[in-house]
Image 1 (cartoon, helix red, strand yellow):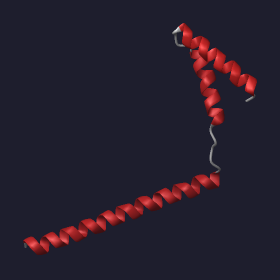
Image 2 (cartoon, rainbow, N blue to C red; image 1 turned 180 degrees about the vertical axis):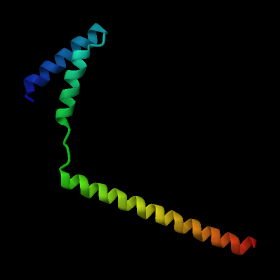
Image 3 (tube, rainbow, N blue to C red; image 1 turned 90 degrees about the vertical axis):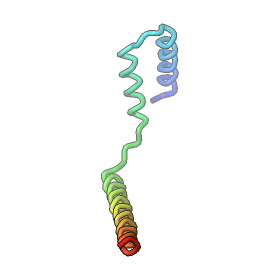
Image 4 (cartoon, helix red, strand yellow; image 1 turned 135 degrees about the horizontal axis):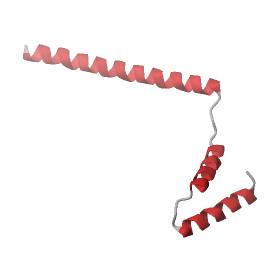
Length: 80
């Protein structure tokens, strides 16, 4: 997107803001501009980051389970 297009979009936004109404066409135009700014991950990045998230979830769940089992065992030893 060129600087002139951005400038035109900003001016049209100011005009629509001053009118006080909702402009559906302007909404979709601004949505398209925002989507063009998004940097989408590559397929490899998507898979590697998803694997990292899943690994951390499994690690956190395992840690929570182990701490819970330790407290359960301790409570049974103390209160039994």
